[in-house]
Image (cartoon, rainbow, N blue to C red):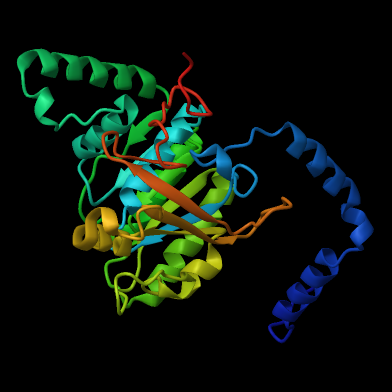
Length: 327
């Protein structure tokens, strides 16, 4: 005669009790895993920002999410484009999903950085000069094969479609870095904090599940004065965004330096200041001995549309890392 389980049994309490018993373990149980992680880390390829001076302070790790935040016009897209090119030069596989810029525009910016020439300069208007540009575009096409993919959609995107795209990139194409530009194009309402939290939470889960690094471009609140440097609390939308992600960079263009130059020219006392600051305000898994939340000074290389590490530095060459072309 079979026995029946009655409805008055508290199965949830039993499940919770069992879950706690299986998950609370002695610390000694994890020592071997920790030792294995140390050995694995020593053999793991390290992936860096484009500028070698940053190596001791920051690196990109698989399974993480980085937010790149900044005000409108402060260079978020230029910085992330250069980072993406640098990752390609480090033999990473990269996908850019820009919902604010058409793929041909993205390619144009990348070719300018890659070739270190401004194709919109007056010198490139003749037929012969355009033929040279064609060659530079072809060289970029060869360089990007097997390294760079673009998601061909502009405008608003459904959040579930974007999440599916990231999974496809990681699982089917073996892509290691996905750039999403920007959060506001994936969650329509700026004040829909729950949707923002849910989207970022799922990005963090997918990054770990698919072993990819996700780069999410985000906007900042409008400051009282444009010359004020931002902090992590200035991001638009839900405060949980910066709580959930692993890394946070803020891109700040030195507008006070530009304004002083316009007003005072050579007499400006700000000429030696950087053109841009990259403010790292979170790096959850940093294990080095230096400052894990560095402030990185950068200077604009106008012809190449890049940022360089020091004033007067040559434009970077992305054929390999470090990005210095051999003579």
